[in-house]
Length: 125
Image (cartoon, rainbow, N blue to C red):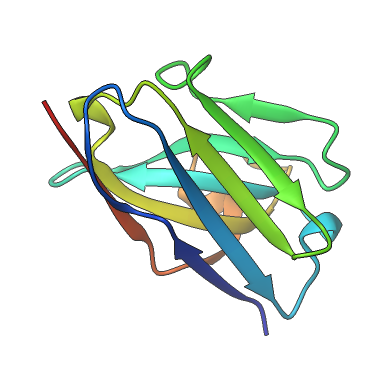
């Protein structure tokens, strides 16, 4: 059984940085694609970033490219999302996910197998 637990959310001001963590149990983070999605109030869950099993490839949504960085620490079985220059538009619940089915578009939540409970990030202007 795979479990994903996010942490690091909170209330920040525009321009601040924040690092989210996702600790996995049941499976090593280096054995599958790991990713982050976010969901703003009243909106659909959207893709933010993913990292390949070997850590050699990362992808980002255009809205966060250049500001967010995904990484992983295999020893801690944890994936991180470093967020910088945060904007009010980044306010959302951030979800960690694991196990992208590469036969499907990674931008769709249905393409991913496991999800955490989410952590709220609120950016004030």
